[in-house]
Amino acid sequence: MIGLVIHGSRNIFTVKTEVDGACVECRIKGKVLKGVEGFYNPLAPGDRVRFEPDAAADGTGLILGLEERRNLLTRFNQKGQSPQLLAANVDMILCVTTPASPPFRPRFLDRALVQGEIANITTVIVCNKYDLSQDDPDVEERLEDFSRIGYKVLRVSAKTGEGMDHFRKLVGGCTSALLGQSGVGKSSLINALVPGRNIRVGAINEKYDRGNHTTTMSLLEEIPGLGDKGTYIIDTPGIRRFVPHGIAGDELASYMREFAPLAGTCTYGLSCSHVTEPGCKIMEAVAAGVIHEDRYESFLRIRDELLEPSDE
Image (cartoon, rainbow, N blue to C red):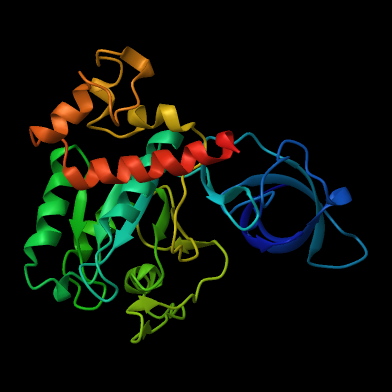
């Protein structure tokens, strides 16, 4: 039988069957799944798997194999020192941020956008809690710059309903993954789409002005009544520090949208580090204001992190 992974941890996964929509608690047969070697976790919500029901225990089964993936949303898990699967087979990444409570963190967005480019998945910035914005000029400047370089930016409030009609139209008929730090309101956005769903949401830690983890593992939610093809949203755990996965440090410029056209055009060509070399077109673009200086600072930080493993 074929089923869709809803959520799971360790070696136990909830799989929704394609035949009748029943949910089956499945273990991986033999505890090792071919094709997922090297990952922190073998499966993610959105994966399609082959499984067989366990005749001896109703509602349980064994996962036999993994269907071919269209794409993967990953990050580098520093604790496990390996890539972690967050979602599979998605049409869109919804990178959620807030103007306040918790504070706006554009460098997290920079990292998430890089991962979207690596995975070749359309990424949209969703600024939730926009009712708290108070027209902050620093927030608006960065949001406008993300728009300038080609990213769609939505300003919404799950609390007041501002912008939610646009959000509903965006996600309708798609499988999307919500990505963001703790406290930005990912679960609240799903609750706003499905009245009565009431996924548990966490309060902001007043001492540190950041969210507490309430979603501890990725979970696929079906959203009824939106689109003819079915609408699914994968709510991923809040991430405080996002380290991209899948490229080397010297490849990073090709995965930052406004840097990419300049990569390879420097005096030193593709060997340019874009840090100290004369004739660097990327540094010239920063000086000219074509590349935002904060984006360049993100580039330097991410590049250093990606280079660290190869330097050890």
